[in-house]
Length: 274
Image (cartoon, rainbow, N blue to C red; front, side):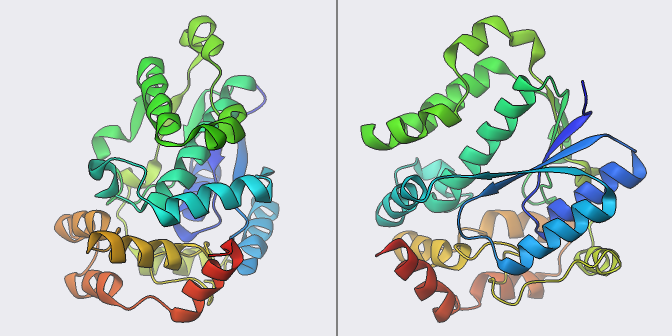
C-alpha cells in the first residue's frame, strides 16, 4: 500500500496531536481524511492546511453535498433517532456525523488497501483496551445496519453510497484494517497538547464551544441534547477523564455546566433553516 495509515482528521486538538504522533514518533506514511460537514470553523481549516503542509502529509477533504447534510442534521435536531444507550455518549447530531466519518474512513481504507485506521479519541472516549483492535467485519456490518435503520427511507437513500457495500463483507473480510488510537498510550494533558500544537502553528478557534476545537455545529447539538434529554452529551466522556485523572474535576464541571453560547447556537439553527 501507498499509505500505512488513514487518519480521521477533524483539525481539532486531539486529532492534530494524534497526527503529529503518528508522523513524528512512528514515521508512518499517512493519508489524512477530513469530513466536511459544512460546519468546520474557518480557523480549523487553516489549522488543517498548516499542519498537513508542515508535516508533509497528504490530505483528502470529503464534502457532503449541502442538501444531504442539511437533511441529516435537521432530522437529528428535531428528534432522537438513535437508541437511548447511544445517546448517553453523544448527541443525536454528533452520532450521525461521526457515524458517517467512521464509515467513509473505513471505506477509503478498504478501497486503497490501507492497513491502519487512526482516530484521535481522548482517554474519555475510548479505553486503552481498544487502542489497537482489528476491525470486525460482522460488527461493522451490524453497526452500519443499525445506523442506516435509524434513518427514514429518504435519508437512507441519500447516504447509502457512503457506507460499506454489502459485497465487500463477503469478498474482503480478510482485508479489514486495524483500528488505532494512540492517545491511549500517552499521558493526556490538554495544556501540554495545546503548547505542543502551538509550535506547529495550530490556533484554538474562538468561534467554537468549550467541548470542540473545530466544529460550529457542536454548541447547537449540545443545546438540543440538553433540552431533550436533560443532561450534557459530553458527561460520559468527561466523567471518564476525571476518573482517570487526566482532567481536573472543576474543569470537567465547567465544560459540562457552562451555558452554550447563544450566538453559536443561533448560527447553526439559522444555517439549518430551523
